[in-house]
Length: 256
Image 1 (spheres, rainbow, N blue to C red):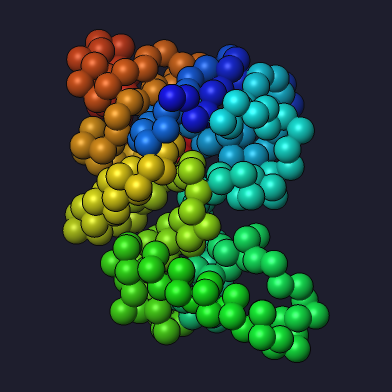
Image 2 (image 1 turned 180 degrees about the horizontal axis):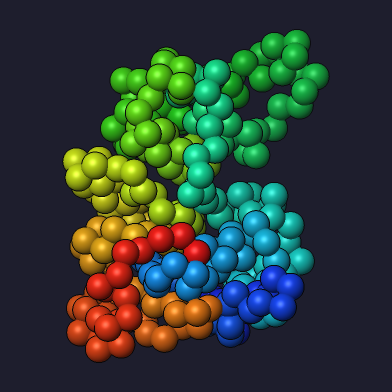
């Protein structure tokens, strides 16, 4: 069943059309990758689908609901979360506290009850800690929960950010170059983590430059060139596509 449908998506910046009539879908429990050379429009598509920037034209639907009039800050409440190419972390907070911030859109306690430490607010905070720890355990860094985020390695911060994005239980997770800067071991750990998310029913859309990771992880791959979609298929189909072989697989991936 289709979870996300993107139809004729376009985006212009001034006189430059960065994305041109791109259409695709993501099924429930599916991992889809966006690839293409530098400037292909990958991150622009990701930013539109995640509500960071509006499209110039086109439609995006989630579970059959149009997102055209939905503000980006309401996406998490619908079950859509994402990570960014540049890490969004709070260095002076602990790893656990960083992950807990991903749950605040789901809380019912107001500023007044939290400030007074009312029983309901305390109970809710304890539940948030429990949930955050579960996700830290799933991504493999629960032993770092009480450390300040500034003490983590780059790879550990990536995993922390992913745990924060997942802790609200989204149905759809978008990732912008999650393996950037990671070593082989960290990338393998992250790949296994994404497979666990899929098994749990979460769909993923990711932009990634690590082609080994993509070919081993994605169910389908969408290839962009100069803002337009030129190919779509399984990893094997993409590997055998002459246009993709000539234009992309031999080039280093980068952000769009």
